Image (cartoon, rainbow, N blue to C red; front, side, top):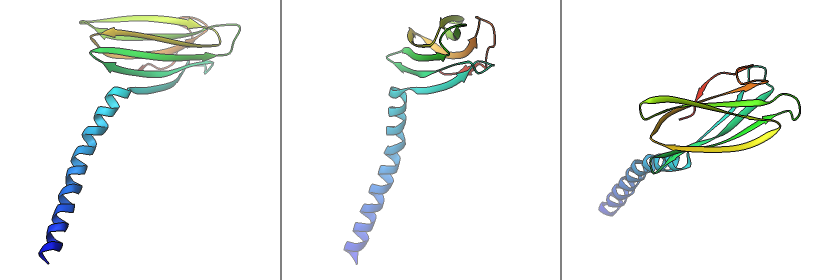
Length: 130
């Protein structure tokens, strides 16, 4: 009887320990792999962007992909980020498919949105990606 109780207690403590460690391990994995985001469409659904944003060593990295129909008007992606006490923004245009990347130190927040046919035309919703 004592052996059975001891085995049950040991198994129970191992299960509790395993559950306590699992969330911490998952959180650590999430922060190193980053967050995938998108598809974020322009308002007319003719262009979209998607990608991944992560932090490593105090530096925030973003890799993004843009897609629109090749030929004719271009797709535009905008990034707005909070760094060193101020907001900054930049954009990139493309025709067809593109892959881009950027990074920076001290970034606290990042937002993105997608436009089509011009920098400020047919812009979709703004999303926080970091």
